Length: 302
Image 1 (cartoon, rainbow, N blue to C red):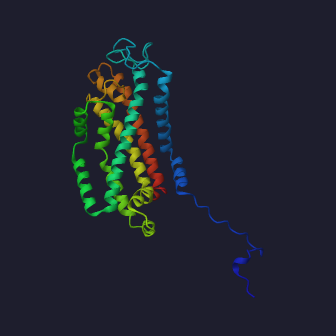
Image 2 (cartoon, rainbow, N blue to C red):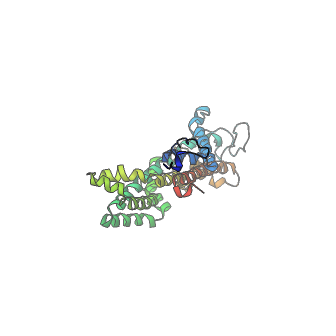
Image 3 (cartoon, one colour):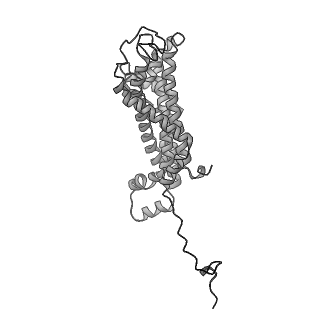
């Protein structure tokens, strides 16, 4: 009787059973790809340092950022003010340490609000289609063609420049890109087999939208949310530069806005908070690019 070729190896001995290839969970694979990206790790380290400085810094440097710490326009690396003092004599380093909390809070909350509005509008438009899609997309286009900064200025002016008003205004004017992205993902996923299977067993529209389709649309939306944080930080800095910020809350944007008239005589009062904004936005952008490469299967082999 003829022995099957696979029953013996070249030496005549029975081959060992080959172990099945281990399949990684998509989340584990994405995390591994993210940790292999040097730029993403650099952004994570930088952002971690900024968060540590903003959260723990005020405990180690409890000075009030609004107190007069030195003579006005004191240059950097002086005895009374390590990074110098602004035109009122306020310590620039203390203002950066304390102002980071407000800046990062505005960025995170405004981005969360923007993503919440955008995902809700995009999910409903992409899932239902038809008239619902047409109406919601017309609303999206209306907000998209409005000058975002001008619209935010109007909202802040009408409802007084507080930290809450600034945060809400940023979230309200920056959700359109996320809405279009969510709509595209839902239109792509709603006709796939796993959605049809859930619908066949009696799943309602709410379950299909929020528990079936949305988790599968998360990867690009997570990247969009990450990048929205950096955009919100820049938006807050722009509003503060124009004087539309809470005068009772120190932030990096407020530091730049309050010292814009003395930019030539006290460059340090604008440069250091501007550098803090630049580094933070750069770190967020690097993390967003790393997440995009890790979560997008087409980019993992680059």
